[in-house]
Image 1 (cartoon, one colour):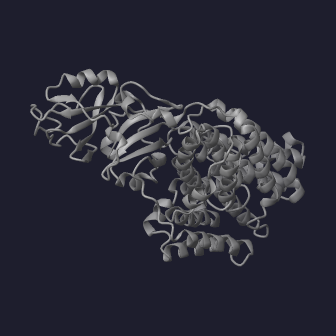
Image 2 (cartoon, rainbow, N blue to C red):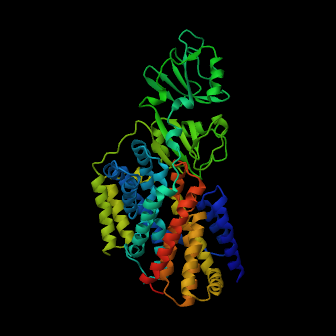
Image 3 (cartoon, rainbow, N blue to C red):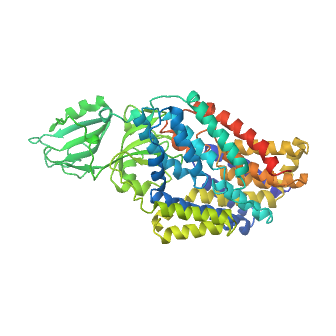
Length: 589
């Protein structure tokens, strides 16, 4: 290999472990790799920026706007309301949950689908007296299975199709071409989850009971009307820097002061809510002018328009991971107070200020109403769901939003326009008709995913132009002995393994040129290998970190890694075997 080829291989070998262990996002790592490759002369600026002009990338971006219109009009919420109902058995509950989710995920990005379903499933499971752990992992897996049915199902399908069209302009795919394999894979996968899921999944208490009783993690005191603290500020009263407690809110005359600042003036009869350990109540009782609250009802169980109780799942991109909550100035940055933390299905006890945040921690937050919209699309949180006072979306435009999406799907399915054109028309109509505001469309764009895809193209171009892809492909052919079946199995296994450890888009785009070079060397049809890459990149069932929706349910479900291995291992084997058996039948070598 040439020096450029060795550099490209070294960069790829470095970025995969970096993406699996580093706190840096995959977009940052891949952009850094592209900058390094361009600086060393392995790729030119046109190759480095090639991903930003790929049709697959823009199709993904416009589909995000269409999905935002469904979310903003409450289209998914409307389906949840009519479909879930009151099933008589656990398997009946799984049927009502999984079939609509898989169907929706065939046409919508599965992240917002799962994000909308999680709060509904948590509430639903409490009403049915079922453990949410039996439902949330199947919810994520069903969304992944549904995404394999169409080219619109996942961003990876669209991106790999964009790569295919760029390399082989004559080899295009229809919107539903994947359904020949995707539907059997989804049907068998869903059957596995419905029949074996209840046997394989645990039934621990999980998040539902961890935050159930506010009195377990809050202490409520009152300001003595005749005491020395009346008319003093929080800072002057010595309530700002307590050792194991912090002041969350003040209930005053039927209203609430949330996220209390140090300059807030105390009034006689104020009811103060502190978060922390019950043992620290002794510290409060020693402060003159504070008396135990005489109200039997917890302040957090009441509804106030100025206050929201919110559950937030910490992302692996959160800037506070590894930092203590008190040191990280969490409250200052987000305008929200941490009331409790749930980790692994159990509430973290002890001094909250000293807890170091971890990915997938579930935080119970007290915040002002604007917090939800301000941080719903934040990279710091995978999921934000409101526990009280939530405003229901206006559903009047939901049928119109669904109609626009259906129209885009039909235009693409019948070949009237390209998938990119259909997505563009749909996004434009969603904005013009008011189904989605410009601000909501901007919030709906997942910039990290888009940058990851674009940067992956630069790394893939380096492998191809430097000759590294051909050299690696030659080595692969020696291993498989020139057998197209073994190459197909190897392609599937390698991409499936990488997608468990790093981003699925990055794994697919970087492996694509190597696999295509191997197929060309064998002189066989590249289509089976293209489809294998698509399916393998979606087969992420083994770990919570392999796919965003897995990480979203990991915290709220109180799961352990072993739960994913136990349930996802069998699903990986079954879906892989079906896909590998059917792909050559639909797209012969």
